[in-house]
Length: 265
Image (tube, rainbow, N blue to C red; front, side, top):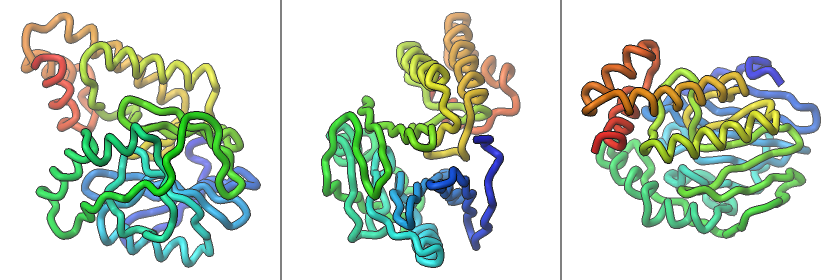
């Protein structure tokens, strides 16, 4: 599946890119919100599974209306790295691993939501979606859609074998990422190499439109460069300047600031 082989549906605020895999369709909702959220709906025989939630009230209303218009019956919400937005489809069961529950109720995810609440105020739904079904690693089937769950340090990733796709939190081949030091970079490289070995058609992430394995390789090269640049620098200011010089077109300077803080505390 070519990452650009989709049908675009323009909405009032966001847009939906629909990928047709035959029996299964993937609806990738680009929210165009302040934190560039992406929400995925995997649909089979009219029933769907939502991966992550929209967290701004206008996006919640827009996506709800889109699902109704498309007659998609949502069977489950997979709440991994983004659990804010509990007002979205509140009656639908929410699935998450123990790692995700911890991350979103007491860990880093909860901290981020609290920061966003302060930054965005009443337009942001800061309520945390309660996990109704705690799941473990391995294969699970919902609405006839098979998924493979893999817990991570923060939450969990999802493989969808029938469409040869994988969902993870972040990739972004032309934007900076939050990298918590060299060991974290090594872990990310290992994960991306796994995607390449598996030959996934698309990599789905929370903050970017669907990407491919060329993008995964670009991110591997970027992470290796980060480690090398860090070894050459004596302080964070020098590190940030050299990374920006190497990648002048990359977006996400706020992520680079966070990475700099990790490499040069």
